[in-house]
Image (cartoon, rainbow, N blue to C red):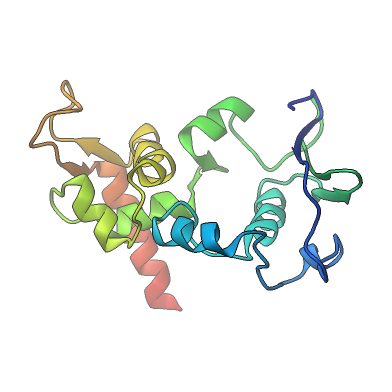
Length: 190
């Protein structure tokens, strides 16, 4: 449920034996309730790694300047992600909705956008980009990598007036080329 000050995610289940809400805040093993379902989900690309979800939530909240999320085990397991209040300082320089829609925070590209920009050479098909990134699930790749890169202006379509064109390819915009050079320059310094 989305509230004015928070997002609450409920799961009617319980944490597996040996895993507590305190342990969720530290690196921990994945203990899937149904390993027979978890493995094919991983192999199909619906999930990238197992056992990293809560760590990713904590890291992303911190990056966005949000209060640390809460993990609560009562009758059901609940995760609370706190939102910022109007007038409350935040790391975002764009409006909340704009920052989320474009995938940009503080004017910087997300890690997913950076990965697309780094692998994109000349003009490439969606499947080619996806294969280089080793992402198996088309919808996940499109929604979390490709569309945010396009919306943020780093990538463009070769047939912009016909997105479903059979020969559709993607290429970097000027903004994307500049970002790629910046990323490569930063990597050389390290």
